[in-house]
Image (tube, rainbow, N blue to C red; front, side):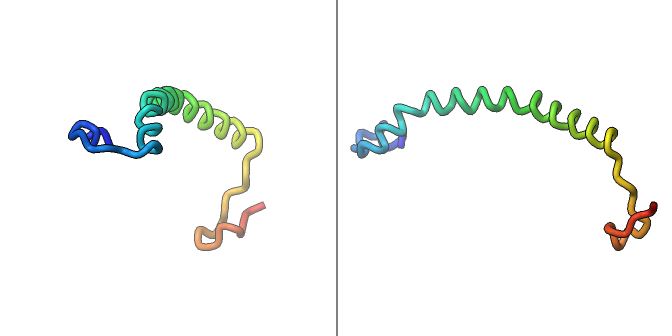
Length: 70
């Protein structure tokens, strides 16, 4: 759309609104990208803690993971 505008071609109202909101959308994406790594690390840590607190029995038959040793 930006290319169309730079060529002097007209755009409709919806396209204008999209272009106006672009800086906000880019800022939101940037903020989410900054949060992704710490959030992923926290989820991994919490998952590890949950597995340590509630270990599951290991399968005895790799072809049938529902079959467990007791």
